[in-house]
Image (cartoon, rainbow, N blue to C red):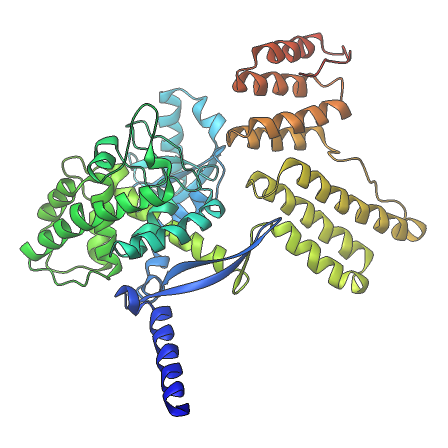
Length: 473
């Protein structure tokens, strides 16, 4: 009996190793990894996928991938001027300044950039705005873990679940595109209904992660993979359905439609797949397959790179509130820090908490509580430094009017109007004569549809130095 039990244990362990290596999915280079996710109030375990071929085949080194990685991490107030054919970055410019120019001025500016960089006049240059506010990757973690299970249950490669959730509508369940696609998988109404979802005036299953994932899996299994397989077979191109380049073609079929991918493949008439074929796809237009379609798999690869960096930053643990991790480490090593080292560390922690707040990883109240702890450390540090070397000025937070207004504006870009208003009202309490803050408050209220409060703060901005207490709503 003991030998039998030991045999069973060995079998279970062997099966577990096979499952963890990805063979259970039929995926040779893809591995299932489990991560402990620590948020501000909870600790959970999620599972994700990692594809070693992404690195072994050099996808992470491609110029287009590096370019889109930077775009995804850049806020929308900055643009990158880049060479269209290879996505080589040339220069960064303010989006406001760029959009404020006339078309002749823009063309003249592009010509000057070509001259300064030894490029032929007329070189096709793109001006690409940052998209950091859109790609809320941290919010996708729980959705990805659920969708992987749904795809596996429907015998569909779960790699597609993870990748689509990273690029289509990351962290958003109800976002609707200009063409009518909606939900985390951005399904069109007709497609959603075809695969069993209810889409009416009163109910839209596309915002349900489980139902949407099931429909997307069926779409990929029946409307994408078989067509890409047939197109490649028609040209005698050898492939494995787990090849990353094959998966990218399937992604293009998901986004642009199988017919447009067929058009591109016929135009290229390839004899082999791989990185080289995908790079050719990025340079090819055919039918409805144009610039946006070319960008799709480039953005997918960049999103994969960003995602891998996020989940592997701290080994088996992912800290959603990075400021908490810094603060925890600070308390561990505070006694060994010199005062100015501690001061600089807390400055970094303060900025990290602001990023956590912008990423919506902590609420406004929790943000202010954490800032209060940082300030306590600033006060403690100042008491140590003052007797020996002078003073460190410790102001109330927010100390700088412009800085906190900029933070509120970032919240507004993310449509976090309530948080922006709270921050601006605090700023106005500290700087009651500021017409700029009052004007920002008026704009924020107007964006929420509260015209009454928008008018109140608009009048206050016009009045300038009028600091009469304003009635709260």
